[in-house]
Amino acid sequence: MEILPDRQKQVRQTGANPGQDSAAPIACDKHSAAGSVSQRACVFCGSRVVLYPIADALHLVHGPIGCAAYTWDIRGALSSGPQLHRNSFSTDLREMDVIYGGEKKLYHALIELIDAHQPEAAFVYSTCIVGVIGDDVAAVCKKVTAEKGIPVLPVASEGFKGTKKDGYRAACEAVYRLVGTGSTEDVGPHSINILGDFNLAGETWIIRDYYKRMGIDVVACITGDARIADIRRAHGAKLNLVQCSGSMTALGKKMEADYGIPQKRVSYFGIEDMAAALYEAARFFPDDPTILERAEDLVREEVEAITPQLREYRRRLEGRKAAIYVGGAFKAFSLVRALKLLGMQTAVVGSQTGGPEDYVKLQEICDPGTIVVDDSNPLELAQFCLEADVDLFIGGVKERPIAYKLGIAFCDHNHERKEPLAGFVGMLNFAREVCNSVNSPVWQFAPRKRRKAVPAQHQEIAV
Image (cartoon, one colour):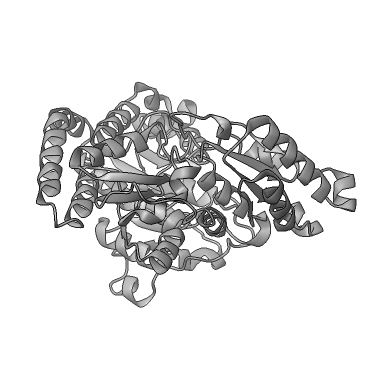
C-alpha cells in the first residue's frame, strides 16, 4: 500500500529485506506526521488515564467542558472502596475566562469540591487553553494546599505539548510528589509495588492475590484501585514491578534514583509472561526460598486448571491470523506469545508509544512477513488488515470501528473492557473471547468474505 513519505520509516515488514531490521531500525518516539490522523491521544489524555484510577482523590480538569467529557470514565478501573474518581469535575472555562483568566474560577472550584467530598488529595489537570492563556495552576494549587491541608497537585498536561507519552511523564511527576511523604514502619521485608496496572475489570485484585499466596506484600498499586496513603509510603517497598512500561518507567526510575528501589519490567498477560512475573518477584527475595516454592506451586495449579479448555480453543483457532495495535509495545509482546499459544499467527502488530528496543524485540519474536508499525492511522491499519486477510483485530476503543467496518472480529484489550484478561484466569477469558469472536457466524456475511465464497461472475451481485 502507499504510505505517506514521512511515515515510511515507521513501518517494517519482518524478513522482507535481509539486513533491513538491523541496518535501519524502525523510527519512533516522534510526533505524528502532518496529514496522518494518528490513533494516539493528547498529552492531557495520557496523564488523565494514568492518574484516574486513584480512587480517593479528587480529579479536576481545568479547561473547557469538552476535555472532561472526552476523558470521563475512560478506563474501566474498579475500586474496592471510594468511587470519587468516577466523577468528572471541570472548571468549564468559557470565553470570558479565556480573556480574563481562569485562576479565580479554579480556586473556588477546588474549595467547593474539597469541602463537599473531603478527598485525600486533589489532582488538577491543565488543558490546551490553560497553556495558551497562562493560568498559574501551580500557584493556585499551592494556595489551596495551605488552606485545606491536603496535597493539591498540578498536572502539567497541556494537550499540545507533545504526545500521549508526554502525558504519562506529567502524571508520573505529579504522583511522585506524594511518594516519600508517609510512614513505612509497617512495610515488611518482602514487599513490592505494582506500577502500571490500572485494575481494569478487577485485574489488580487477581495479581495482588497471586503475590499474597506467595508471601509477598503489595505496598501500593500505582494506580489501579490506589489509595493516597499507600502511594505516600510506596518508597518503603523493596522492589518495583513495572507492568505498563510506557506509562510508569519514569516513575520507577525516579524511585530507583532517590530511594534505591530497583525496578523490573513484567507483564501479566498470557501464561508465559504471568509465570515469569511471579518468578521474577520470588527470585528477588533469596533469603526466603519458600516464596519461590509457593510461586512454582501456584503456577502449576493455575496452569493445570486452564490447560484442557485452552487446548479446545486452540483446536478451533489453529491457523487463524490476527492484527494487534495497542498503546504500549510491551503489551504487544505478551499478545504475540499468547496468540502463538492459541495456534494463531500475528500478521500485523503496532503500538502508539513503543521505543526503539521494543520494535527490535517485536521483529525478533514475530513470524517472517509480519508488518510492524509505530503510531499508525486508520487508513494504514485498515489496509494492513485487508492485505494480510486477518481474522481478528486486537486493539482499543478507537480501533473497534475499523475492525467492524471491515467485517473482522474484534477483541478489546485496552481501557474499556469489562472482563479481566490478566493472570492465568485472564488468559482463559482471552482465549474464550477470541475463539467466540473469530468463529462467530456473523462474519460470513461480511462483503470481503462473501466475495471469496462467490464465483467471480457473481461477485458484483453479491456485493
